[in-house]
Structures are given as structure tokens and as C-alpha cells.
Amino acid sequence: MISIRDVSTVFTTAGTDFTAVDHVSLEIPRGSIQGIIGFSGAGKSTLLRNINLLERPTSGRVSVDGTDLTALGDEELRRARHQIGMIFQHFNLLNNRTAQQNVELSLKFAGVEKKERRRRAKEALAIVDIADKADSYPARLSGGQKQRVAIARALATEPKVLLCDEPTSAVDPRTTASVLQYISDINAQLGITTVIVTHEMNVVKAIADNVAILEEGRLVERFDLAELDRPGFRPATEIGRYLISDDITLDRAARATKELSHA
Ligand SMILES: Nc1ncnc2c1ncn2[C@@H]1O[C@H](COP(=O)(O)OP(=O)(O)OP(=O)(O)O)[C@@H](O)[C@H]1O
Image (cartoon, rainbow, N blue to C red; front, side):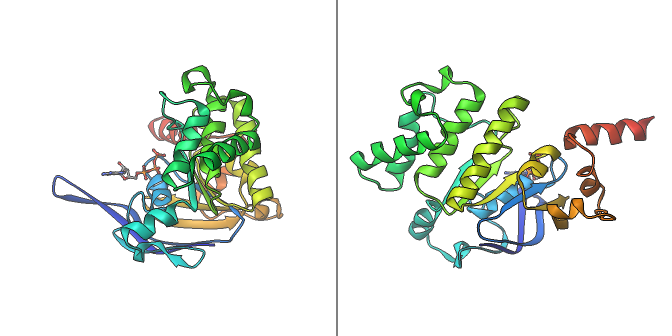
């Protein structure tokens, strides 16, 4: 279980403070898929990065399976981070390494010995059906294939948690469906608690159990997605209500709102 307790993140630029995440508390049940949505700049990525302390919160606590990450020293935190895999919108693969080498590198950082690294990297690539591209460099892979390699890299260290930052924003709709299928299969088969930040409503609806809505750094609404099927259920926020309309991205929603207000 992931426990985010009263987390705030303040950035200071040229002497001015900006609160990107504002006193957010959120409990994410073990093995669930938590969606985080909100308009651009709402603080979604920052909150996600707060979970593995890639961005250390200014205040508040983050625990994963009972371990308070915010209380750990550098070495302990480095070890704890191997329990938390992460994938990104632009894949973040090293271009001068093959798919296999990209996955092996994360195992090397986790202290896994060489022969074992090879075996586990192959296994992780096979989970996302990309073992045949093990010797390919990222430039030779499609966006969807790159994201699958990135998922394999995240999985190789056998994490308890998978953090996904806009994992399908850079791929076409068909590839989106396949990437989401892999993420949801992995969640079901390996029981990995998954947190997914997206501005694509159809992505949240396709995959998440719960959704948390951020506005200007604050958690403004949270509900179980099964609620959407309950007659009479009406989300309290505008963004929550966008979940009822099909196939909309918040970019498009934001543009439409802007156009309406300028009309
Ligand atoms: N390192 C930083 N220094 C200063 N400001 C930052 C930093 N990182 C993020 N911000 C600001 O914090 C706010 C929240 O950013 P964040 O990337 O978390 O939002 P987001 O909801 O993920 O947006 P998007 O959907 O556009 O990616 C933004 O206004 C952003 O400019």
C-alpha cells in the first residue's frame, strides 16, 4: 500500500515560492491501479515523483508497504527505490544501448550479478513480448516497442510499485491499447500497485480502479471508477464529469473550455 500523508511540494524560482502539490493525502491500496488526472500544471507529475522521492516533498510523508521513505537515509532510499519501477512519456531509454542492455543496466544498479542480470532481463522482455528485439537499439524500435522495453526495465527489479507518467501520450491509439493491456496484465498477474498519471480520460477509464483529481496542486476529488456505472452518480468536479464523456483528453477539454469562454 502507498500512503501519501499531507504532502506538499514547493518550488522556489528566483526567490518566489510556487506550491505545485498542496497538502495532498492519498491512500493507494496494495495491488490496485490508481489514476491521477488533472489539467496541465495541476501537479500530477510532481505528486507521482514524490512517491519515489525523485522529487522530495517539502513536507509530509510517503510510505510504501509501511516503510516511510521520507525518513530513510540516502543508501536505504537507494535500496527502497528498487521496489518502485517507473515509466515515462518519452520512454527515457539510453540510445547507445540495446533493449537488453537498457534492462540489464537497471539490474546492475540494483546490485544484481552479471549472469543473473542477463537471465532476468530476458525474462522481463519476454513478459512484454519483446524478447525478439533484445539486440535492437531504441532508434530501431517503434514508440510502443520502446515503451514495452521501458516497462521491462521497470519490472526487472521485481518492484512492488509501478509509477507511470503519461505512459501513452507519445504513442498512437492502437499502441495505447496494447501498452495499457500490458500494464493491466502485469498488475493482475504480479499484483504490482500501479499509479498512472494521464490527461487521457479513456486511459483512466480503461485501466484504473480509482481516480484522484488534482487542481492547482490540491486533491479535489477521488472516487472508485465503478461508481461511474451507478445510476445517478455525478462527480463533484468538472474534471470528474469529463470522465463521463467518452474519449476526451484534458488537453482537448481545456481548449474547448477556453474557446467557449472566448466565444
Ligand atoms: N523543478 C521545478 N521547478 C519549478 N517549478 C516546477 C518544477 N517542476 C514543476 N514545476 C511547476 O509545478 C507545476 C506542476 O507541474 P507538474 O509537472 O507536476 O504538473 P502536471 O499536472 O504533471 O502537468 P502536465 O500535465 O503539463 O505535465 C507547474 O506549474 C510546473 O511549472
